[in-house]
Length: 289
Image 1 (cartoon, one colour):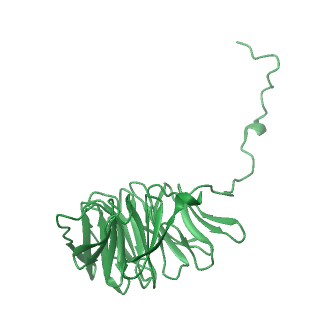
Image 2 (cartoon, helix red, strand yellow):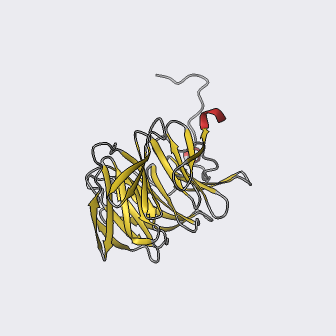
């Protein structure tokens, strides 16, 4: 075989070497929302923190500028926001996943949390109300939980969560020694004692859809959503359906403020409720297109 007559000559050795240049991530398009919830928040400096694929982003809407954290080795699956809104903790997929604590003002790594039973991806992470603790939930069959302090990021407690799929974890905002997990046929309230914790299962009863999607404390009660669109209120270990069929599809997200309870669902609706769960008004996101 002979090369074409107009084929370039054999390159010199110097032409085959990699150029002395580097690539820098400039802009990330998109947002992971199809299988995630409560994963975007305005930080203390006004930037918006979120993630897409394996990149954690902050977006400054005034300067129209992004900053990026790119140390994750796989897709990011979860994010938690510190109470002072200056730090985030993000988890990832992978057999030996890592959760990173990041300063959103600089997007520099503060800590790397790994091991302590956390394997087969990270399903969710959360900060305690005081900001002194971070809980990380594994995607493994036992959904192991590791709890770290934020003074030196050492693991202070670890153990099994539950065999049922865990979709959310939330600390009692006024008691760092209590937290709940919620998921598929699962509501479980834990008490931390030293380096371990013990949990008690909630009782759904016959009339409640037990496929929970999210959970958040409202005072000392816990609000959860389910795949029927119901808003449930747990006082202790039993739920009350305070807003049946609030959403026509799955209720995906709940936000509690000092004055209101906000819910979002797969039906593209946002509802603003009073503190006693009366519907004040709704927003149809499809109508905003």
